[in-house]
Each structure stands twice: as structure tokens, then as C-alpha cells.
Length: 127
Image 1: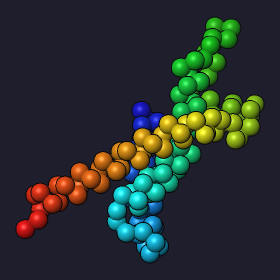
Image 2 (image 1 turned 90 degrees about the vertical axis):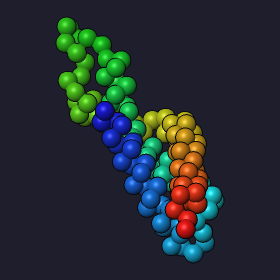
Image 3 (image 1 turned 180 degrees about the vertical axis):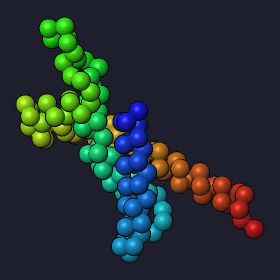
Image 4 (image 1 turned 60 degrees about the horizontal axis):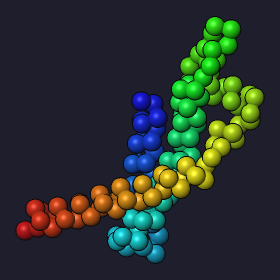
């Protein structure tokens, strides 16, 4: 559940901010290119934000019992042990393939959303 919160919060907030930043730059208008670029930025931010939570989730799912006790107590314990024994940046191991999966997903999600919003406005709100 924590992963879903992080992914959705990062994805939605970063898309809105990225889109507004691109529009304010003067180099983009509110079109599919702007939506694509904002989505790719959002995918990058979402990947960076969600990977530590995803690492914790995966480690908990795959943990072993050591002397009759679980390897980890909770998600925070996973993060502390990973940073201590493997280094801080190991929380982002596999960043490129994760982004390669999440980037296109984010692009399709927001391009479809923008197209649906555009169609809704045209069909139901035009006067």
C-alpha cells in the first residue's frame, strides 16, 4: 500500500508540475509533445521516488528466517540494513530497467488522460 501511495503521489504531482514548467518555458504549447515530455519527466521522478519502497517490498516478500526469526522487522528495517550493508545508492539498483517499464506506462497514462479530457471538454462543455 505504501508503494501505491508513493507511486501515485509522485506521478500525479510531478506530471502537473512538469507540464506547467514546460508550458511556462515558452517552448511548448499544450499538445501531445508537451504531454509526452511531461510524462517522461514524471516517470523519471516516480522511478526515483518509488524504487526504495519497491526494494523494501521485494526484500520483505523474499525474506528468509534466520535462527527462527524473520530477516527483517519491517520496511524501515529493510531500508536501514540495505543502506548499511550495501550502500545508499543500492536503493536504486536496477533504475534503468525500472524506468524503461514505468516511463512508457506513465506516457500512455497521461496522454490518454489528456485526450479524454480534451474529448470531454469538446463534447460536453462546449457551448
